[in-house]
Image (cartoon, rainbow, N blue to C red; front, side, top):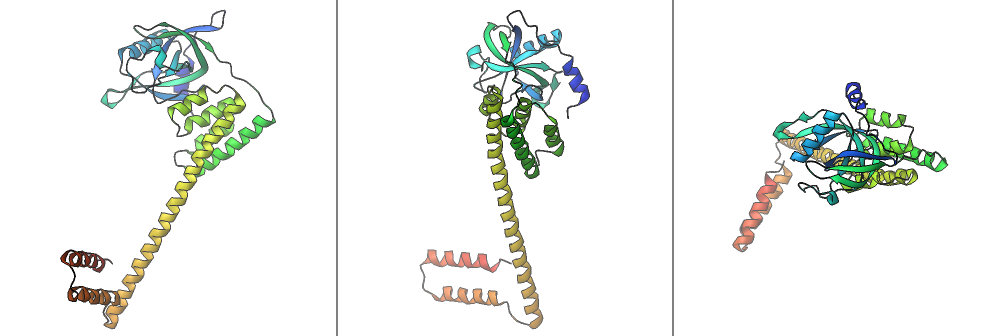
Length: 298
């Protein structure tokens, strides 16, 4: 599903070195409105802050991975360490791609979930010591059932949503790792940043599959409701079009027979009754206005 050239470029980025205690020292990139899950390539819009761009340049020069951490306040500038979540992702960064209005975007390849232990530097960019959160590789009947349920819901969502093309559904079907499957499906859903962060922080595979299934089922309910509403609107439009067609046919027949439109005759009679009635001026004017609206309807 990913472009082979892009994937190869990101694969070439070296993972951070791990010391004897299982700890890495990495540059930190604050991100907003996006979570980069392991094994998934995600576009990331970079902050225009000098510290963020400096961190990216250092990562590119060293060809090493960085740690991406979500900001707690997406509007905050020059964020301090305590304004970042401590669970993030070790990621490989691609080349910076300039966009209109000065925005800069990079493709980020998720490698591992990480937990920040301490920040070692705040200027000119953030650096931190972190440990990799190992991914459980557990397969049992409950996990298998949850995976089957999740895939079934995802396939149904694909039938209702134009935002889920067939190749995305097909790709999900090829994923054998339960944690990866949960992360991939979560990355396609319309979730808030806090919800995405919650999935990132859910280390237990069974719980993660269940949480994503609940979120997917909620989105599926919205898709089904939207589909039902669209169907009702279409039926109403079809009914209105049929009524307009029949009314026009009736007018043609009446014209051929030399008859006046019965509906228009009734409106003419009502107009005369309004004119003859001694109504207060505001009521008289309002009644004529409503009647005029009816008379111009097809």
